[in-house]
Amino acid sequence: MGDTEPGRNTDGERLEQLTLDFLAHLELERGLSRNTLHAYQSDLAQFGRYLDVHGVSPLQADHSDLAGFLAELAEGGEKRAPASPATLQRKAACLRSFYRHLRREELIVHDPTTDLRSPPKLMRLPKVLSREQVTELLEQPKGTEPLALRDRALLELMYACGLRVSEAIALEVGDVDTDEGMLRARGKGSKERIVPVGSSAVGALERYLARGRPVLVGAHAESSLFVNHRGSSLTRQGLYKVIQNHARTAGLAEQMTPHTLRHTFATHLLAGGCDLRSLQEMLGHADLATTQVYTHLSAERLKDAYFGAHPRAHTRRAGTPA
Image 1 (tube, one colour):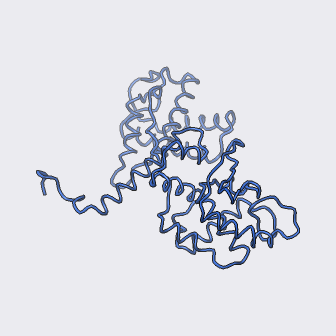
Image 2 (cartoon, rainbow, N blue to C red):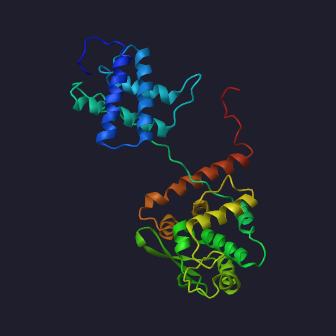
Image 3 (cartoon, helix red, strand yellow):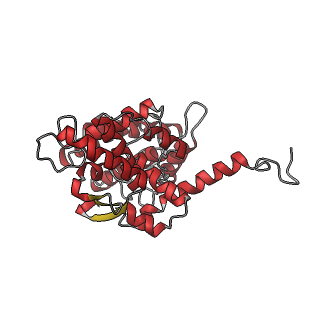
């Protein structure tokens, strides 16, 4: 516990001055953004109100005071929802930075945040589409107009190969072998990998290459596989618009993010029996742990299917009270 002042008294005005000095240090010496400074100021003001209620001076707060503050935020209250893990992480980081600053300034003897642990971040499982939703999305580009052929080929290929957005727009015509059903993708760090292409995607690609792309490119010398209406390489923003427009038409705008088809590809492969190592290679993950998130997602979907279908999934166990 700090020992700069006798007793444990409320000291709101002192905290306000300490906060201003701390924020000035962050702005002038560390160059933090205005948004971060405002967030830290708000966090310390909230911490000060907690200390006031418990009759503790900010210079004499110990580890239990700080841990109690975070625990109260995590639990929530009658008029306050529990703080999210990300919010708790930020507040803990703010307290650490604040008290380390006080220690450097020799305003306290001991740093109460030395053993302060941030609450663990919750793993956010990616959104995926059902098979029926994928079919609905892929069938949105209708007709034989060049852009419709392009959009169908693009959506089919992203789902068939689990491509990142950056990989899809980087594809060149020579990267796809429709005869062999194989594709060369350039992933992060310029790493290349070979990914199989299913028959539906191959068919969509062949129609686009035969009757769509030549019309769009015209006389341009363009090597990119997917091009815009002017015949130039499709941009990231252009690809986003293609996906968003067709997702909206299919009624899937709420479920779609730029990575949704990649997540869906991985989840559907695992559900169909693909082993984790093969999936890792197809996704281009350097670390198997990154791929393992899809095992958690598949388990969650299995649980949903089980509890939605099993006739006794929600019955009480013998001996449990009604």
